[in-house]
Length: 301
Image 1: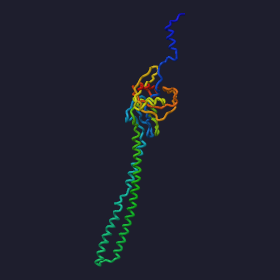
Image 2 (image 1 turned 90 degrees about the vertical axis):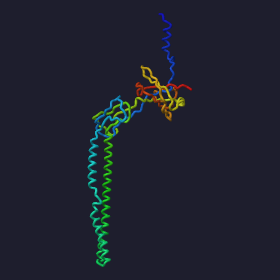
Image 3 (image 1 turned 30 degrees about the vertical axis):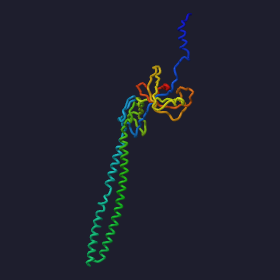
Image 4 (image 1 turned 30 degrees about the horizontal axis):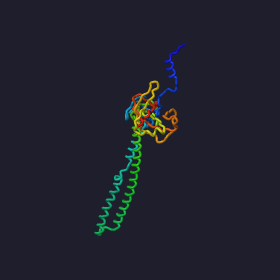
């Protein structure tokens, strides 16, 4: 059997393991973004939840509602209690009006009696009785005023406490409206209308897929060549679909080293300790959370 020499050489080259001239990556890691879990701020039945996985939602947009019937009923009950207390609160001036009028008359009578005594038309016993009556009325007015003022303050404190509870109800009614806190894409939906939400129950998770970050790991030797704000090239792996190259900016470097995470490659495969760093990348729609990517070595200057 006869073999063509050119075919033999080509086949051998394809099978040789050492013929790959690709350069080891400067660093590698996975794509991530800021993820926000939106949870229920009040307990109750979910009346409405207008979010779907993959849908984009703007910050500040109302997306659902928790049943607030109980909070509104509490509000009515508190309003009734406040109304009853306000009606029961005594009017101090009105309560003391009769005593104040008697005191004023006795003081006028005292002055008239003193004039009569000076004219020797009245005796001192009459004046003493009037003075005694004035003293009694002053003590009675002071005691009643103290009691009434105390009652007014106690009622005012109760009204203040009930008003605070009303503010809590108003706040809970406001929190019953589910408002999306940040702009982004719904990543996971955890609840559906008709379900009962407890306080703090996750409803959905949202993330900004337009602004991605590559969390990469660099060896101790390589990290010294980097600085915040430095531009780096990121190559994302798309499997059989090949790779895509993106421009990135270094935004964060860990202050402490850590052991190399499993599956992460660095230029120095022998490195045990590496530094985590984040590289901001604009997403063109192809990048996904958890996708593997590598960082190209920057040009030496």
